[in-house]
Image (cartoon, rainbow, N blue to C red; front, side, top):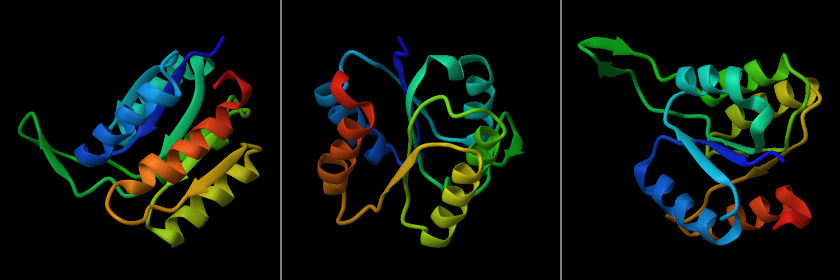
Length: 144
C-alpha cells in the first residue's frame, strides 16, 4: 500500500494547519513536507512509488541563504515537470493563489497523464480545514 502524503508548502502557518488536518483525515498515512522543489524532487526520485497523494504549492518564496550560499527554492512547476516525465503514480492536488502558474502546472501534469485537482486558497487558513481537507478525502477515496 502506498502510505505517504507528500506536500510542497513553504508557509509555516499553512504547514501547521495542514498537519492538523492530516491527523484527522489521513492519520494512517505518513506525512512528508517540503518547503522547496530541489529537495522534494530528490526525495521523489527515490520514493515516488510509496506516495499515495501529492499536494503542491507553486510560489515558494525568494532565494534563501543556505550554508552561506544562495539557494533557489524553485517552484511547484519544477515538481510538475519532474512528475510529467513519469507515469501517473497517484493523485495530485495543486493549492496556490497564483492562477496563471496553476494553469501551467495543470497543463504540464495533464499532458503527462496525471490525475489532478485544484484548491484555491481563500481567507487566512480556513481553506485548509474546508476545501483542502475535502479534496484530500476525495483524492484518497474509500481509504479515508
